[in-house]
Length: 575
Image (cartoon, rainbow, N blue to C red; front, side, top):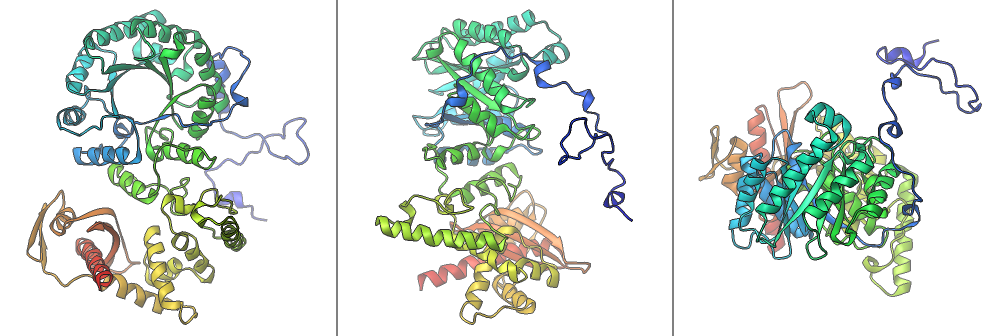
């Protein structure tokens, strides 16, 4: 008999003894993973015992959300944002309703310094109710550079950080507890001197790797800083307590936060903030439990970008509140536009299964799930009619859908109904199997509408060849027959010239379109390549597709296809 494990020779199937006393229903065996090399969290940091209050609490209002995408998220990118992408992300934050935004590390990056100066000097760049946050290490020269950057900003938080955990003190800094405390106090005092006479400047302190720092030590340091900065209710300090590297279950972090919440001095003059990372995959849970434990402010990134496994995802946190009937005080009414912007600025894709925003999160592949959702929609419509209110205002309760997709700007037909076609072979599967096309998920959704419009009248199932002809007519034949030529960083299309970092960017510049997504692949083993472009043309987001033996030509054709389809749609609308 051949066992499946022989097909994976690099894996070591657990073959140790079944633990003594294990129940008969659990035959798991001891494995060969070197777990003995690691110390459990309770051996690495002692959390004082206390009568926990957080388990009995509920989150009934949103904390202050602070996006750190432009600093913490940006430093984690293989290709950090250029000024244009930084500005685009900042504008998105304003549109969503963020009121405190960390914008950079101006003493460490010329790009960050210049961006902060732009915010400080351009009239109207920062709304009157928005506070800018800048980041600095505990060195006098870096603090001085930071204060140079913020000159002219009316409302700003200067964010000081230093690692305080034993491993970092010993290995990274090479300093004792007292020496690290003295370093922090000296830097904090220098900041206070630089801020004299500037009432719009407030302070934030982060004991980096707080969750691995001795609680008594970090409490002593934070209380000392609170006193040095003379915190008051009208000029509070922020103590930001990061789980810089997740090392324990979320309840341990909540205990640490509650300990600080109870024993921080001048508590009414301190804003207790958290900054969870996601190394164990529990960043969202850590943040939620921390808010229960007394946190008032949460730093994170949109869709969880950040070092290693990322920072806590502010979108998931906020929409979790929304689904509990709590106003998140942020707007997500067009979550796909938010996602497109973040993907453009980070040059990283958002996973198809990412909570709330992924392309597949509202899609049911299972026939039983589809049936339950359809019945749920019918029931929802009935309840709305009985209440005498529009469906968009009726209480939401639909199987398998914890949130109404329409709250996020999504269409039921595009997101859910299209998937019923996959039971008959699947539009995407037929195009891939028969013609080697690997459509991006959002293009699959868009093209499904075309297929439905073509087949709804007849009711019959479309064949693979008919499907490809629909696809060719809709996309491949949509490109205008314009003349074009390109160079390394320029293009001329139909008499219009454009420039860019590459030929395709230059074509987009010539046509005045924004490329939001681009991908391409070879078609089977043949000579052809297919390119897909999602672009914003005249305010509309459209897809274009090009096919050619040249990858560059396929890309240009895809951009032209998007433009042609946008023009056709505009002509139909105005008729």
